[in-house]
Image (cartoon, rainbow, N blue to C red; front, side, top):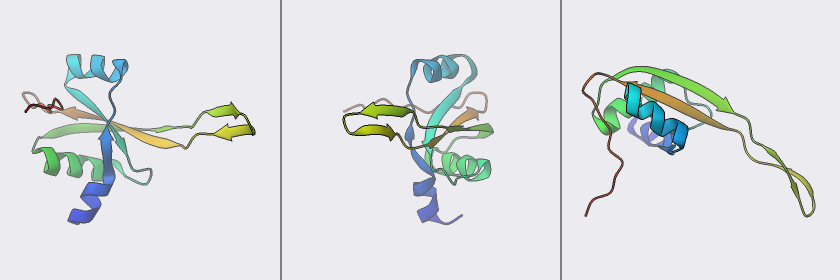
Length: 98
């Protein structure tokens, strides 16, 4: 996988209450990923960018919600979420320190 693709696979961390509870118990981290990314691409991107060992990846396609707007019905974009399980003793810290 080339270096350019690595940066396009991971779009950012997905921080919610559900993702936080998963990260506390089983060393899992949730990411928003590109819709065309595979499990293997996500695994390689996380291992290279954060220098951690990945045990497993679960990928979920999230359907966009249909919303009523002022001009009629609208739809949010579909997106993809990946839960990455890290090896024992590995950790990714997203806190910003200065």
